Image (cartoon, rainbow, N blue to C red; front, side, top):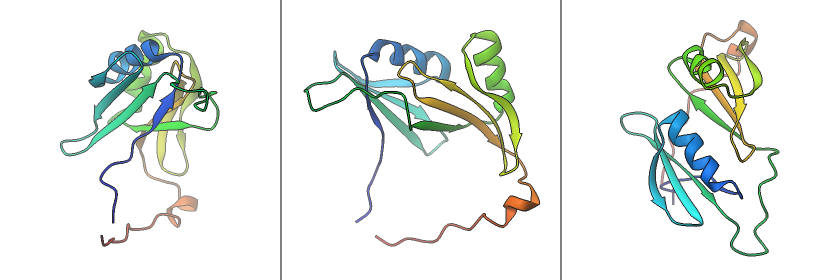
Length: 142
């Protein structure tokens, strides 16, 4: 059986800040919003929708996300335009500068209010060194 959807849920005490960050900077739509959980959707293409949830801890067993070991990769038409919008116009702090990468993208990173690294990129031609690592996706069966 194949999953129908997979989405991250980040446990944070910065629920309001995350709501504002993703709606303001990425055009996220709020599809569920109660006092302890929000569901945000990003329309990533005509057919694909990506969901991200943020929630306040509901029990002692739920630890707050500490800001390490998680990155959201967001593919955009132009990372240069997003860089201008987020860094120059909105004044967000840059974590990784805008640059071309030999594996085939041009991108930069910022952090969201919960401490998640947001890598914003667009595809470019990979260097000859990295072309060998690309494969065609295999068909899967249910």
